[in-house]
Length: 622
Image 1 (spheres, rainbow, N blue to C red):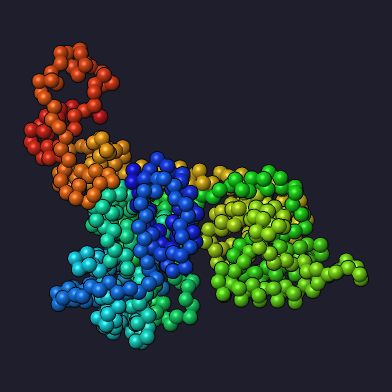
Image 2 (spheres, rainbow, N blue to C red):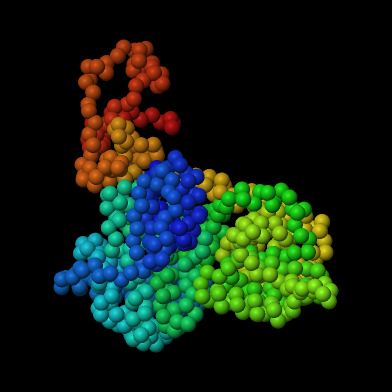
């Protein structure tokens, strides 16, 4: 089948989110064909280029979310009126959303309003959807939206919505700078509405759209479903609404409230239109349910990771230093290395020979400043120690990065210690913890994100921001090597069972087939020889019914767009040549394996009464 893979800030670029997961998925499903539609976030990302693409990637189309080029589209009076109407409706749904109430979520209203809440919630959801698709249709008719979304008309429509009766308090308190910021953020998020991806030679030609994340990345999938009836699959390892709450702490409450309402509305619409939703863990699944996702559509698929680089460390756990603790990851405030350092001070009181290796570097200036702060704290808590009066002292805490002679890889970092520690206060799916499990290492972690789901009962879990509890758990494992060995072996077995690339690829292969088997046929796809392509149409698409009367079309895969305008008619066999005696090939007693390929039937034939009448019906026979 042909898959339209939708990404934002990731694959096929070298840097970005979910790039490695997408690459493994595409390479693992070599029997399918992939068209990649990528949204980029920065000029630097585009400059670094793409990863090497496998042959099953037949097409890559990109669009920028970071530049502000003018599309040059000038609206007439009627188009301006349409834009003001749709944008005003969208702004109204944002200004009336109560801060802290997730659209589509249950349990966010009072008992007095519990009966009216479902109808009101559905009405607001439809209002947002109509405004969103109205803007998309306007962009398709007029050639684009960027100039209109940055116009004074958009800001005034947003201001009217915030000042209208029924707007919540934070929306009414929004000032002009706040409105300008919100309008700019909405313009960036809505840029996919103006793309030319939604034609028969674009996303309209794929069998399934697979969004590698929610939010803006899923927006092209929503439009492909709206314009071309392409089914949508959404995979999320971190919900965008949650990320919004953790981001931009310096923004004003009005900006945060309006943008949170937009992300919540978009998430609810995405979940409502998706054929299936695949969260990467139970933590993301709970957020999706809170945003209105139907439980019947949710299927948890754990991320797939390559266990091969960690096999050697996992098979020889006895090589680790029994007194060394290891932390591996990206240095940033959310990792709470300050609490880890204070916990290690307590550990040193009980185990004076213990050492801590912090392996990783910062990703941005904020991370660099945090790393400098942690180094200063370590120097203050642990003055350089020497074994004797004539020896050079050394600090028991070391800050290192992989790639050097001592730690060539992350596997070497995990292998250097007997105990791996995670001290985060915010975490999605703990990929680093799973890598430690592949290495057969016992772990001590804070109870955040999907940590408990990942490790199960194979490690110790303590509350976040609690250095004393973290220290006690580490001391308990440092003093009990047999327990460490049991937990490490159990962790490795769990990781190999649940978190490998093979299980991830197999799960998505089954999900692709499941969605296509339940999707009405939109067209018949023919290969170069004129034969139908396997899985290009579900089985029920071949049964005469209402979905095949007006929507089925024939398309030659890989051909130009004009090739899909008319059905492809097959040649008609001579009736005289089809007459064969009973018992011979093609006769009533002939076996199906002896018969040649069936004659191709023009799609227009299904509308003829004679074609319908010629199909025998037998009761009780499937």
